Image 1 (cartoon, helix red, strand yellow):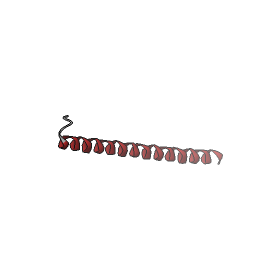
Image 2 (image 1 turned 120 degrees about the horizontal axis):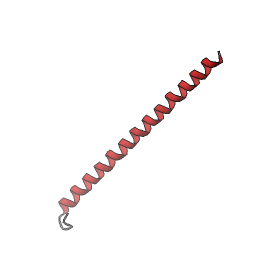
Image 3 (image 1 turned 135 degrees about the vertical axis):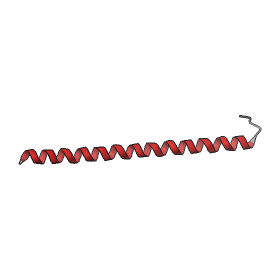
Image 4 (image 1 turned 30 degrees about the vertical axis):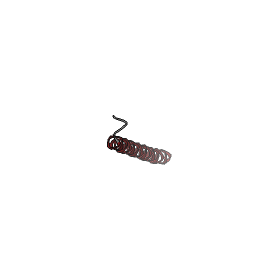
Length: 54
């Protein structure tokens, strides 16, 4: 990467920012999936506990 070429610098900045956006989006999706899994597990455990009391 030549420091004297502004087009290359701009291209590098665009690539880096898009990669960071993609990585952040993936992390958000993973957190949503984890939260959903915890909610499902919690609901099932509550259901199982209520059924065992009967």
